[in-house]
Amino acid sequence: ERCFVRASPVIWRKSTVSVGEAINYMRILASRCGRAVLYGRVMPDMLVRLYDLPPLQPAIERCEELGVRIHRARPPEKPRAMRWIEETYSFWRSEIEASFANVPISCHLAVRDKQIVGFACHDAFAPNFFGPTGVAESEWGRGIGTALLLAALHAQRAQGYAYSIIGGVGPAEYYTKAVGAVLIAGSDPGPYANLLT
Image: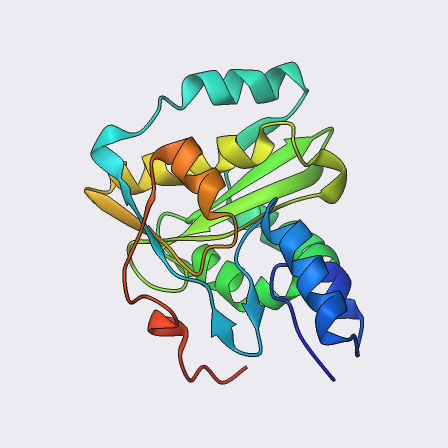
């Protein structure tokens, strides 16, 4: 049976996997990274109170200790960012393109030694939405994803939003712990229903 797990670039590159194999991959990857879709079923959305966010600076400083700089993407960085997305999280290409079309650009990058190691977007799929986001697998568990998450959410707060919606969440427990996100009842599949993909 063919199956696609949205959070997984590994499965995206595999044309056919068993349902059991896909679910195992999804469980592992969704516990560490962004959204997941299995047979078109999107996981629920979550709501974040932007007026009650953890501070951004400590997360930025932890990344700087790793030699990683978090910053809002700039127009000349788009070709490089899109190449990295194609190699790592290609399914999200259209949403990253949309984030680069916003003014200001609503994509934040994590960079070490002029190499992209992660990204986070907001207001890409829809206004007031966080995501997509992803970090190079070799960098998982080092706080880079959390710094990107906070950078994007603080940017949304600066735009005047009181709340942000994290769309189609995989790791709900992570988002609850990191930013106090709560599940939105009845949000599966939410705005992702009937997408032409």
